Amino acid sequence: QVQLVESGGGLVQPGGSLRLSCAASGSIFSINAMRWYRQAPGKQRDLVASITSGGDTNYADSVKGRFTISRDNAKNTVYLQMNSLKPEDTAVYYCYVVARTRGSQLPYWGQGTQVTVSS
Image 1 (cartoon, rainbow, N blue to C red):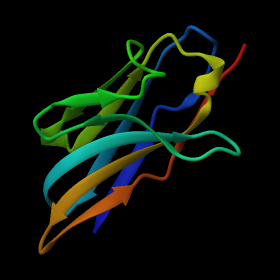
Image 2 (cartoon, rainbow, N blue to C red; image 1 turned 30 degrees about the vertical axis):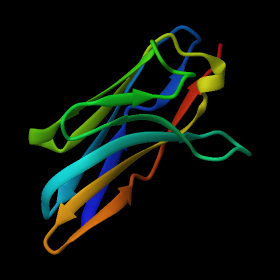
Image 3 (tube, helix red, strand yellow; image 1 turned 135 degrees about the vertical axis):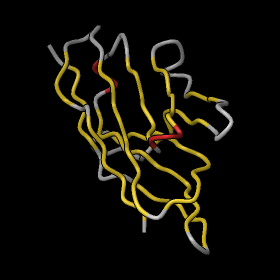
C-alpha cells in the first residue's frame, strides 16, 4: 500500500507564490508518473502538470510559465512551485502517482490541499 501526504496549500494574495509538496510512503519499488491535478468548486478535476521518471515535464496552458513541477526520487516526493498566482487558480490540488509495489503497479491519489488566491 502507498500513502500520499500533501502539504503547502493555503491562502495567498494575487501575484503571490506557494509551493506544494506530496510525499509518497510505503513499500515502493519505484514511482513512474507524478502529476498534480486541481478541482475548483462545481468543475471537473483537471491536469495541471506532470513529470515522468526521467524528468520530462508537461503543463496545462493556463499555468505555463507560472508553475513548475519537480521531483526528488530519493524522497519519493513531487513538488509544485506556483508563482504569479491568480484568483482562477483557486482550487483543491491533488497529487497523483503511479507506483510500483511488490507485484503491482497502481495509481494513487493524495487527499488534496486547498489553495485560495484572494485579496
